[in-house]
Length: 273
Image 1: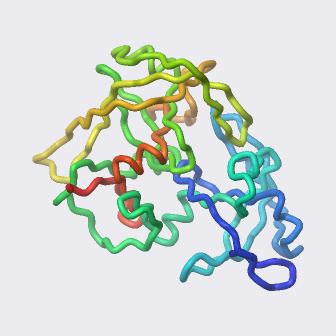
Image 2: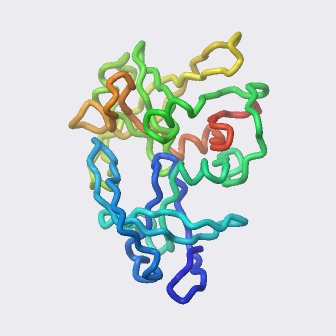
């Protein structure tokens, strides 16, 4: 829910997007906001290939479960929410910073968003573990390390993406363990729409245990990825010592694998069955 001009709350849905640092508001609902919500501030919001949009900021009071908060939202003119969600009333996108602020958990094993019950993280009873610290330090979002052959690539754990995504460069410069699939897909971001090819990819994800004696493990899998051409990376930062982002691990993959993203303790993990 969010507060409208008349002071009442309007019901709707928020997309929880762990692949976005910032919150984004649906431009179609802007007319319902109180005038005092709008700020003089503008922010540059970037997406694929570091291309983005300069957005006006509005500070909007929202209510989700027991949480009531006034949250800064970027108002994008490029994102068409109806194209993604049809007639569903999508108010906007809540990013990783909001999840951290309120100590929330994106729990694919229970298919819910909930408050974290952890104060300290432990490896016990886990089959996959990845700390969020590296991704948050570099990009403000959680990343995992995908291994293709002997090469490593950063991929965002992106709940706002419904199809795994990988650059053509990362696909072809690994062990070439993939099979092209007939057909195409569309990648929609704040920077526009891209038509992608599809491939079935064999890959591994790096599990980094807190227990130093366990060190690291590789968790192997096979899944379909949409392949983005044009540039070597999806995103990069100014610090050349930090690896660029080469792919996205989708919400559908995380649901199938029952991932848990705990933004309170800063870990992605999978519980043993």
